[in-house]
Length: 136
Length: 136
Image 1 (cartoon, rainbow over the protein chains, first blue to last red):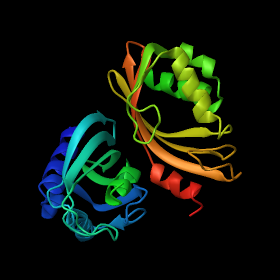
Image 2: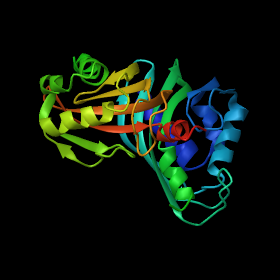
Image 3: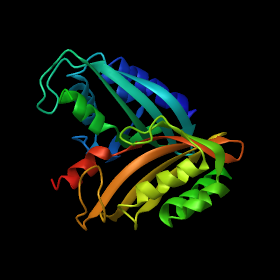
């Protein structure tokens, strides 16, 4: 089931931080179709590029965890909603580490090419994170 | 089909601005479960409260339109992703009208109680709108 595939991908790659495990889940090209505020928005990455994205994204929040709230499986895509939390241990967009817990919610559509994930369309509550980084 | 129900609800109530038509689609109580940045987040509204929300939300952007991008129907819920656009004709959170076009993307899970919509869980790109309002 594609929903299980997405859940395992998020657990291994994003929660456990095993960037190399991306090879087990992804198609040869991964496109960030829509993800406003994400530095990779609009780009198509190969496997090495995707691993770099995982490492760079997780770097400042190394204990980050996505908790899946809701999942809906379509024919060639999986919709999820999620909560995300982690400790601010490094520079994020110019905001230096504070040691505080950051929290964010979001929704993602993972797109499949056959049985492999080939990209996503995503919205995250970046205004909420921006306010937390500003200490508001 | 619940997906059609949601599409018709959005077209009539939100795009055409017929707040009274909400009576045709909603359960007797409507809960905004999660919608960070929305003034009604966490509230449960009756029909009149929901109509007020539609009128207040649409007031400053009266020609607003949601364009549905993707839909996934679950047993008691419908996931959608959307683009939104409209002309800034009135005060939004202290930002006076500019006459400019505002654009936003988002994702919503509509929850059903039987065959009626009883609430939503939503994320919108409010950081993007905030930057447009600031004229950045």
